[in-house]
Length: 536
Ligand code: HEM
Image (cartoon, rainbow, N blue to C red; front, side):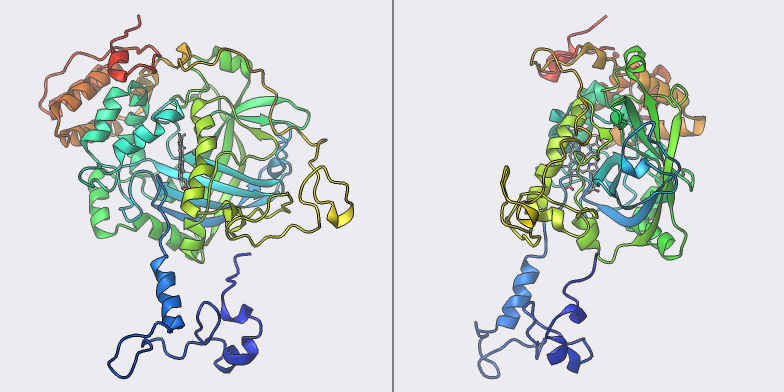
């Protein structure tokens, strides 16, 4: 399916004409016309000006001039591979999704690992979150599990995503840093967004400098829904566990590796697959019901919180093996379009306001990045099951629906009639009850920003805690504006006094007042005002 349609041997009459003569290697223009000279433009006389009629030259240069497409607005630097997912069992007690319906059932996948903040040419060992995005080409269409290697996120509501990303990207007046690393705007934002504290701790931990893509976990982050064929629903959190185990580097190693080989992670993945040492990841879910969701200390719709595995253990579903590198990084890794809204029957969304926002953002951004609604027809994005609808035309259309009518209802029959929606199929949305006034105020259940940050800190070994202290001290030490350091230390006091004290000591600073421990969910106010609204 990834056949190169432009390779000489797939051409029609060219084979018998010029391709055949040179053993199939004859160079042509993009129109298939033989190139007689690829070294010289057509010019007037020996030293005269170039001639406009040199179509071969214009064809070549014009294509080159348009080689670049916009890089991803986030996760610009990434590396992809093909794989296969195999279900351990028949999981139809949990979900109607076909890919989980039978022991040994195999589904092709494509994975793209990434850093978040850096530009496309940035270094692999930046301290950053890693993306772990998987496209499952199932019999019922594509399911995209677009996750990260950290189980929580910086913000609770997608409306803050542009602000978060603007704060972490290169500063607009100077153009650096090109990758996630210490700077004022990021820590300014984080220190004013108490909800980001939990994720900030993970980001300062060893998780944010993985040894390679093969040695890290992945998480769907949000609470999703599984729905069975008879309409029974449960909440799930997705987890990927690497069969290779988890490993990180330490900061000094990361800095050296970045200098010596900025492509370290992509080279590692490519080498492993090419040598037959196929990376494996186990996919599992934490499963819980409405009663658990209601009894849990935190809101299961809040993506800044985890559900501890000690409370809800992971049920393994199957395993993915990455077994094939891409043929072409641009065609596959760059043009792959992951979209959270791609779910298959048996998998559904919840009301997590971060997930709901993502479901809008991904398709929207693909349109500006890939330039056409027909990006779904690119080999890496096209479903591997039949596709039938009444969409037509648009830029770069090359899939044709057969028949005469491309609307419905229509009264035609046979091929002329076209597809019909399967009204007897499982509903594509679980029928949840929706009620309440339209409002922007965030629910009270989203208000505790520090308890799980504290739990995370306590779960770390002494060595890991030292790495976190060092990372905060290094990062905050690079901030030029002293108030930002002070504000962040004020937040850290709410996580753990000893953490705050140790970071302050390394920065040779006095501990400031703690920030308000709880922040009322009045995020319709400017944050600085909201900070003064103390609960308790
Ligand atoms: C890209 C994960 C939140 C917008 C990505 C990618 C990953 C990812 C893994 C890279 C996909 C690839 O490799 O092609 C996450 C996770 C989130 C999150 C785990 C939170 C739990 C958000 C939010 C928004 C957003 C809240 C916007 C409202 C985007 C956009 C891209 C992207 C626009 C670029 C997509 C592309 O050009 O292909 N995200 N993201 N993300 N994400 Fe997110």
